[in-house]
Image 1 (cartoon, one colour):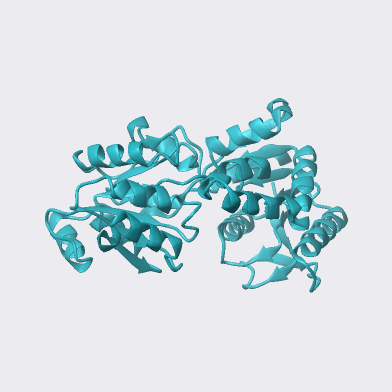
Image 2 (tube, helix red, strand yellow):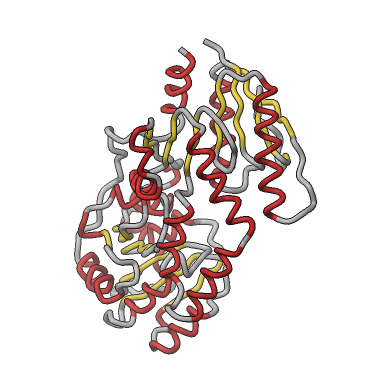
Length: 370
């Protein structure tokens, strides 16, 4: 049965996780024969075939004004559109299906503040967050959108648990978990010859234990904890850091701890499969991560992986590879040393009991429009 469906997100773009997912969903819905419109503030890329953009505009004002305008304009377009079903990726007023990829703001603040040092740095960060008009509006829209939905979908079990912590009343609503399913076809374990060649290209000796890390927000992803852990490990443990930002205070931390010579900052890395394959361990000690694709990509590359309890992707890791406290460098160092002695895992197989990807959303459309 064909349905008239709206997808709501401020940007129609290929850049960004929510944007990329929304384009894939719109494409799949149109391919399935549905009448799809994409309600956005601006269009940065051509719409998929069979998808019509509904552009509501964007005032050249503050971030808070832009958020408020889109919420108002998208709701007006949704009401006028006569849709059978509407999907929102957040920061809207009402919808049938609300996909929560970022988690509740209150929990994000509580967990992510640990990435800044206690005292003035943390206090200043939290003060700026609380006084931000945009954040005040986002918190209000979070409450409103959660109250005005038929089905709420989270991208990991961890996000589901965070939502229930922040909004216990959601336990009485239809709350589901559908994971992102990144394209893992580019990622596979290397042969021994391939691995040796790749390791040489990164300047690794035969006896080196290569730990890799990837992220743009070094503080939130736990680079400080990992750098401290490296200082407690034997000198043959090396750290390869992928990410476009200047190392800044993390470079100074490495110098203070005497490990700067054991850390290579690679900048932006376009060939992540090669980095994963060259690594002995991929480590992402995140303070807050709803569901890191990098963890799944590293697993698919046959690499041992360590992450934290507060990363939704840790659902796919054994307990011994999950760090309980993202700031606990001593425990992380012990985990890294123990994990380095383990056999390399085989190819990653997606668990059959975990819903993921686009197909469950197509099933949801069939369910809600039946």
